[in-house]
Image 1 (cartoon, rainbow, N blue to C red):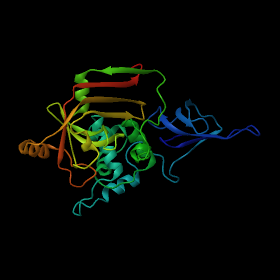
Image 2: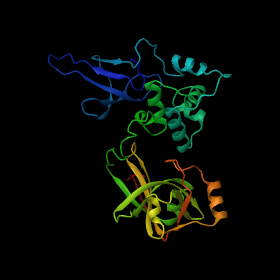
Image 3: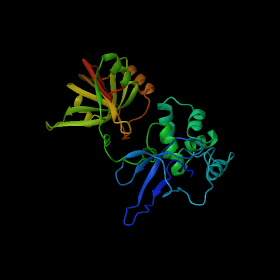
Image 4: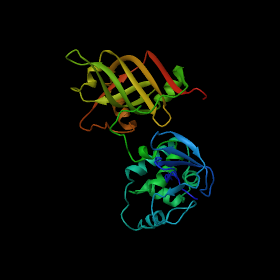
Length: 304
């Protein structure tokens, strides 16, 4: 018996009236795909180490394909060769962008990622640089290497709030110091600013921000909701949630918000900006927040 990641293990009970059981193979213990397997049972969603008996068989993801463990699938090879070198350059697809982002976030090189995912570097490069639809097995292998899920690489759940995963069994809660908070703020990103709207109601709005000399800056339109921050003390928050590992962090900055009016400073901020505001439109009002308080917290597994 041989299997690939993502194949289905089916148990056909020989006892009369006994229920059939099946599950997804999510872990291999031998490079040649022989048992035992880590199986996520469909009826309980629990993962167990399984040594299949004579009543078990493997249902492969793609019927009719020869068993293969090492190297790209024939369809993968054909797809990689189909990219015409002299044709117009195609931009990366959504899957490719997510794969490339997660790979760089994990600090992995392309060849090392391809080796661990048991695919050719050429095919991984093709996935990242062109619109592609990898097989489920290839996505599962990539997700395993990148500490994420195949569903996440396909964009599943993008319209759902983060944090849908289960809580850790033994979570570790840690307060962060100012230096680590500054490091997590990084140089730019998307954060949320809490303001009081013109009608007196509280509001929280996401904004693209930059960090320049320990000052948080963002640009907006003069009549927009984020502009209500000017002249008041505001709270600004950034966070990251890793649904696959049920852990994450958040940083909260509190301080006065003011408008940057000096033409030279405005020009420098515009030139140094990593991106234009995602909502688009004319947004030339730069607002700066110099934190008087910077706090954060992190949740990780208790054994980390």
